[in-house]
Image (cartoon, rainbow, N blue to C red):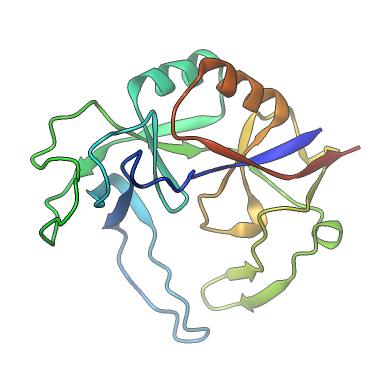
Length: 201
């Protein structure tokens, strides 16, 4: 079975994009490996970027994703393995030179989409390698890939949507071909699926 990465179509003139500015857990730098240990928690605080004031069904800030209520209702009705968090729109720090979603925000309700399932890659077949393995902060970091990934069928229990365990804190979101077909059929906007690999038996 094929798997796909859900990604930003990168069309800033068509759909609004955002930057994540909080809320962060206590920021700390590991004194052994030098890596930050802070992570984003609710509410996800965002600032809308310049480009347009048109909000899609999916909105992207890197691999962080917020969705409109229609997407949330659909994913919940189909038992996708996700949870939803609160979103707080913050005042932009710079004056816009191009169109941008208005502040104070009066647009449609937004929810922070986070997959709850984490699946393990076949590291050798996927071609990912350990970059660092710190015993102090217990963070093992792997090289990141967007394609050529292989999931052994033994690590998959029918999940429709998931994160990759080896990619740590990355919110890169993957779906099965069946799940993607369901999303495409609904016609949701601002969604760019990219072939990412396979689930192998």
